Every structure is written in C-alpha cells, then in structure tokens.
Image (cartoon, rainbow, N blue to C red; front, side, top):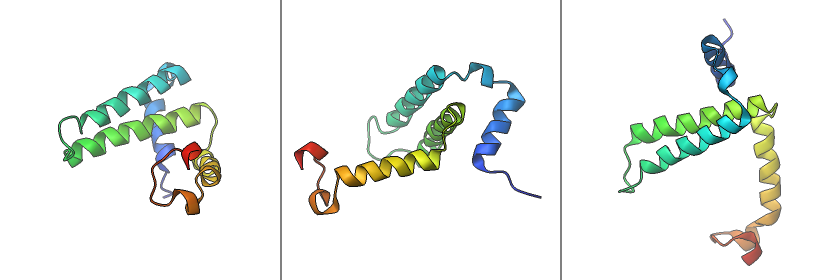
Length: 106
C-alpha cells in the first residue's frame, strides 16, 4: 500500500466533505490570518505556551497554507526555495549573522 503525502491526505479530507466550494483564495488567506492569530493567542500572556495548543494551531495554519498553495497551483517546496534564494541575497551571512536588522539597514 502506498502511503499518501500530507498534501494528498488534506485534499482527500477536503474532497470527502465537499469543502472546496468554500476555499476561495480570499477565504483561505483570511483563514490563515485567523489561525495565525489563534497561534499567537497561545503566547498572549506567557512565553510558556501549552505545547499541545501550539501544535494544534500551527497545524491549522500550515493546513490552510497548503490548501491555498494547492488552490493556486503552487508547489510549496518550490515557492519556499525561491523565497530562500531571494532572502540569501538580501541577507548575506557576512552582514546578517547574529543581527535582526532589516536588509536595508545592514
């Protein structure tokens, strides 16, 4: 038996429930922001957040991100690799190592 990827499992989960009809890019982007807010809420009053809550909220954010990438026909690995290439140029190690300044302040 061939095991399905996480993206395939998410797609099957959505299809089984006929939820794709609700997954416009706009709705998915809103859902990502909402779930990111819920993730941030885990740390609202303390840096020591409940690990189980963080895992759940982070999974929600990642799930919506993967669904949005799929909806837009984008490969998550490729877009992250592309962004890393851009960030490597903006933040060269010799200038950015151990610093948190934005690229234009380096």
